[in-house]
Image (cartoon, rainbow, N blue to C red; front, side, top):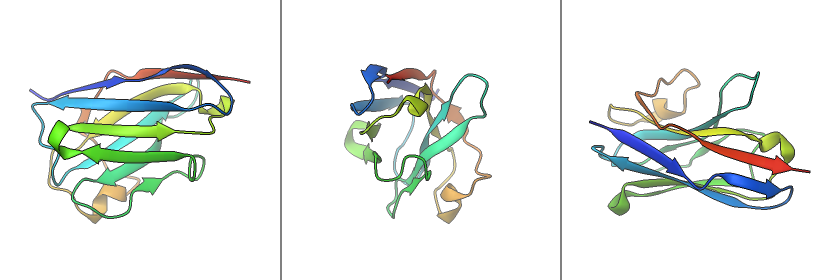
Length: 127
């Protein structure tokens, strides 16, 4: 049974930083599509960063490009999201998501469907 558990959320002032982590159990990180998504109240879910754990350049949404960094630690089965220069508009519930199939270029398609989801961790940025 695959389980994804996020941690690291919290409250921070604008300009601050947070690091989110996603620990996986029952899941093999290698050659997989993984991502961080967020959803604010009343808004649609948004993919902020995605990665093919087999390698290659990660994807970042324009809203976070240059401020967020997605990374993986295959040995520890951990996906991370380093968030810097946080803005109030970054306030949302952040979710870790993972695909079940072998990764490829389609990891970055907007239509990619993730099979596994964490429970989410709240990030609140105050002005």
